[in-house]
Length: 179
Image (cartoon, rainbow, N blue to C red; front, side):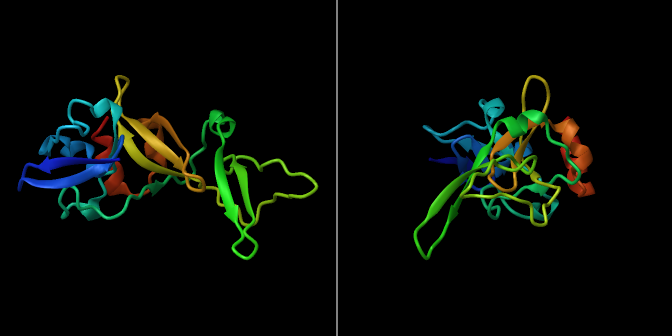
């Protein structure tokens, strides 16, 4: 379900996100929109929402006009053990025969279990399996929402714990302002 608001700068109705994910609204811009009836209120409900990262190359864009959703790779990030204990799902499809398979994604931390019909192995495994994709305020401080780059399953950690793994210095400086 799309979430809409009125952009205060020009009174335009804009899409700010879907359900609790504010794909088109940065945390610092939540006060620059007026919630529409029946939609989330990004000011009153901020601690229930996930906000877009403040990418510097998007500064010239208006709220609601950002390009498709994106995150930033966390280089060298070591996930918590509980990430592997909460697998996601990868779906593979063979277009020739119509065969489909669902496989547990353990987020690059371990291989799925195989059997006589299916074998799993690494082929050029990427050690950087996670992206920082959203920020979310909480009583304990700003949270970083982390997603597996393969299955997109999301987890959270304190944002301050994730900042050392953000290599884009300008973005990192902006994120540090949230703390």
